[in-house]
Length: 110
Length: 147
Image (cartoon, rainbow over all chains, first blue to last red; front, side):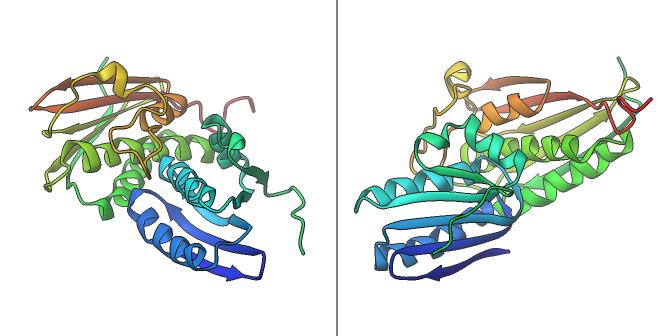
């Protein structure tokens, strides 16, 4: 459960796993923020492949990272969402803050 | 209408208990043979309501969260989540999507998520006394549409 951070020159990828709720979001947030604050990447990608459960705390996590990235004009991508979690993110209007992609959609790799 | 089966539990308002609460409620509701999707709906709604107790009802202290679940003959699951915390002064405003008193990391979508995943959500609150959230969901189950 938690987050694994991968980074290259342009992008930081956070591989999220397990359950995202108010309890687990705090540690996930700290790990992501310490990685991106240091590097100020052009793009932050949140990868939901291994996320088995999320509630609105995951939406808060996306909104909070979006605000942080604004400080240096970084972009946010939220990828590999299950159909259900994609629906929840859209319901919350997250598509206006970042790119949302479902599990089956192609992720550009670089 | 009387429940055909019910369970009660009391939890301390520690965030580590959020996952236990949603799993316990959904495990009990499993007697109605819900689909995976219906189980996820209940889990998510319970997670939101319990989180509200932890972050809003008892912001500076640890208090008790009282959970009651009733199963009904017609396939309905009723979940009642009660606290004796600070209460809500303006329920209508609290239930508006994106409204939050906390800002920052909270999306303000707790009640909106509960309402979208459950059939019915009722909130009663007395400032200084506590809040009770009651949510109903009719479990159509795995047999639905398959004869």
